[in-house]
Amino acid sequence: MMLTQLPEISSDQVKEAIRKLVQFLQATLRISDAHTVDFYTEDVWNKLVAISPDTVLSSLSQHPRTSVREYSDIPDVSSIFSDATQKLVNLDAFVEASQYHSLVNLGVCTPVDELLDAFSIQRRPKTETEVKADQFMNDKKSHEVLIMSDLVDTVANICGVKQVIDLGAGKGYLSSYLSMRYDLKVYGIDSSHTNTDGAKKRNRKLKKYWQVYETNTSKTSREHTFDQKKASSLPKASSLEVNTNRSFSKPQISSLTLEGLSISDSTAADNINVAKDLFKKEIHKEDCTTIDRADVSETTLSFLDVLPSGAVELPLESNSVIKVLSEQERAQRKENNLKLKRQSESNVYKPLTSYVTAETELRDIITDFEEAIMVGLHTCGDLAPNTLRIYTSKPEIKAVCSVGCCYHLLSEEFDSPDKAKTVEAWGFPLSQFLKKNCCCIGRNARMSACLALERVAVGQGLPSESLFYRAVLQVICRDVYGITQREWQKLQKTSTSDLKDKVSEQRVGKIYAKSTSFADYVRKSLRKLGQDDSKLSDQQIRDYFETFKHRKIELEAFNMLKVSLAPCIEALILLDRLCYLKEQEGLGWSGVVRLFDPVKSPRCYAVISLKPL
Image 1: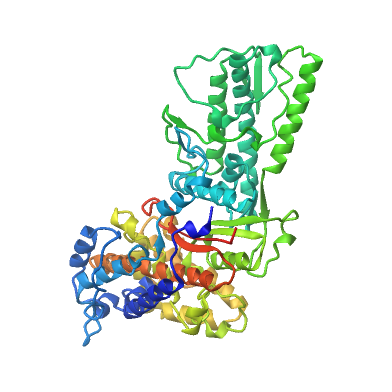
Image 2: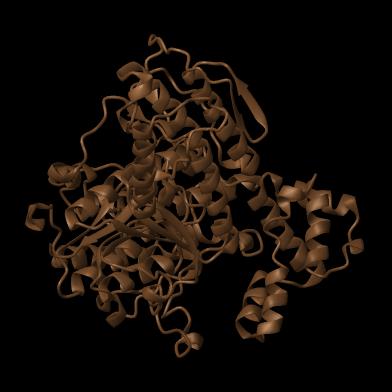
């Protein structure tokens, strides 16, 4: 196919959208940059908002989620805040402007349907039955992996490559699925040994139970198609059909032993189901918090049902199967095993541990590095922009598909002047267009970008009680111990590396989950901060809680205002990356695409680019 067939957003369109975003975000920075830890100590609500919290919550909860709209004029930003008090006074104008300054309404987001239509010639034909991967991952991850793997496979076909490099691979969900479902050679690189080791363990389990599945499926298929004595081939698993009305004949197997469990005389279908159940139990034991063991309907293929037979190396049939083979059958079996071994070696998933930067030499990590495409599903912080830097600097990388996250961990060139000489590749801004304008977002605003508007709209994203606890704790720290959040932030910026480590250890973000009450939370937090909690009685702590309890609604309403700005801040970060790609010479097509359902996956946008074919 020709890349000119793809829907194109021009460089001028991207820059114009960036200009609008910068202007709007500068006007609303007082909202997005406010820190919830200081909410009560700085009296944030009364300083910044002239509307009742009930009105804000009522209006925003009833307002439709961000969607594509037609705008005849750009919303008037000047009426949002009072010129005299600088407080928010026009909620309707605020909401309308925040929705206008989102990717879908700025006209710079490529619809995924248009992209897939342009790719249709290169896409694999869809199976009639739905494919589900939720037997070894939760619904959110299953949704992301199925959509992204389909796109990655299509791009690989267009570029004519078989190697995929997955940066920030984590537990290897996307990597293992790409290798087993689409016969791609995937290298999953992650900086954490824990993630890499977990990915290897998960992959071994998957292969082990796939062997049981494939062995039984192959035997049943041979019995239905050939005489047992002349069977010589293994069918592709992706061509199998699930039909509960189908009559499976019983293979003559005395027993099949797996991990000490004996599966005595049963149908091949029963053995397959046992293998699936065992796999799910093993994975559930490993990480029960990430498994959604929803029932699979009769018309649904499971993850194991769609893997190609060559994805793993199959063993010879169990020695417990008593069968006399002819010389021809032995030779055929040997040839089949060699063929499967070569296929499994050519299409594998290999987890690797390495910290990747913009200067990383891939050949030092991947010994057989060749033409490939680079992907990243929710790559954290600076890894997403560094992925694009590697893509533009390596001629072997033919395409990139990057879904970023953790914007609060991005390094910012113009937010950290004291570090300007020590950081070679900043996370933001990436484009020369924004560098020339010294564009800065700020950490608190980037924290706001991590909030998910769509999840709040469906009742899943209101601030938890932990944020309220932390804000009241800050009042106690100020009143009783003379500690303010700003002093801690200043200390972190100016202290030596050893002292910085000590300050980092004194953060209290995870204490809420381990606390039985507000008093318990306060005491544990104070001790971690190195303070004497005996200065306060339980009654004094409860008095602080009661004093601010009626003001919790202010925190909830303010968080909703910040959530409304989240898509705008995310848009600026993503358009900076797209603008960077547009500035490079020799690239074929680049765009920002909404891949996922934002309710299921709030970080739903991918930056995609292909080099000329």
